[in-house]
Length: 476
Image 1 (cartoon, rainbow, N blue to C red):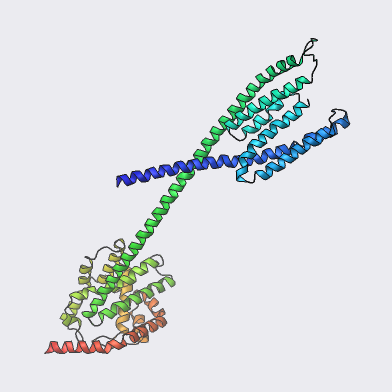
Image 2 (image 1 turned 180 degrees about the horizontal axis):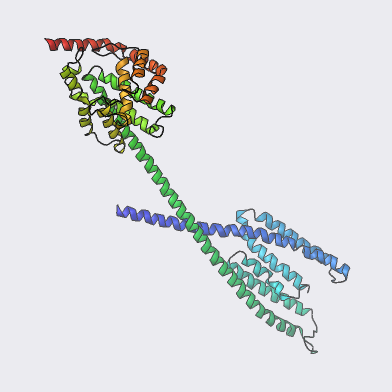
């Protein structure tokens, strides 16, 4: 495992190095394209020079042949156009860079040969242009070519000079003129070489560090993004597993509730009915402005699911009592009244679901759903807000289904009569706002009750007959 971890780290380092290198190259390659375009425009702007050659003679300043002016103009305009086109193609961009520098060098030389330029600093034009590429090798080559071509220009110019007076009246030969000028220009050009080299090297290093810093930041961001994506993916996987686990837990709860049907004819159906009634009562309370903060969508889901287990304590009630035909004796009723306490005991062994929130609600519902708002209920006889909200809602759903459903000891009553019971029990058995919510739900309850009766009609008579035979056998 450790070897795999180290291998992954090495791959990450190599990937990072390649990322840094590619970004470094990308920046300087992009710079070449941009500077190529700028230099091409500078060369194009240099075509103004031959235009001045035409204007100045009219002012009596220069005397330049028109043919020479046309040549310089064509030179600048033609090469700038070629470079702008060539710079559009990736393969031609490096070639374009070198050709532009050469064109700049020879542009100055062409002017120098004609003795139009007498200021030696003009020969710095090409070296300083080369500094923009941040390429030390290019700058060094440019300086060398510029210097050699400049010496060539001075040699050619020296051939056209027979005599020249420099500071004295002593005649000067072409060789003497060349040597005296080349020494001075060489000293000047050494400074140009050093300055341009230093500028290129320093600027390249600074930009390289900036690119590296930005690239490292971007790479770190990408790594963080990859890690976040992995964490998100892992969280989704865990959420899916938790969802599946929770779904399985709810299925098991539903199964336990269904198992009650084998112990009591009506309890199995009853918990299914009350689950639906708890859900619609909660939503109606929220719609009416009651318990809006408490009854969130998640809380309502927990309440309606926990309703499956509110009568789980009936598993500890003897079948002879639980399924008795007719009313209970006082002793039997006391046994029946034990099912909330028995339910609480059973649910205390239930593994934690939803961080224990579900367990708390299930125990509240099982233990306190027979408590009454006025304190006359059981097992503790608590009243009003001492009764948990979940149990107060469960009490309403429990009584509602008991009223509209058939039992072994009674027949079902219609929904209208059930609503009358809730109206009379408001403030006594039920919290007023919960009773009002049930009454407002009358149209929906009517539909739900009818749907339940229709779905259960085919098996109801058969199961009643089975339990009748069961009791007949008990009497024998």
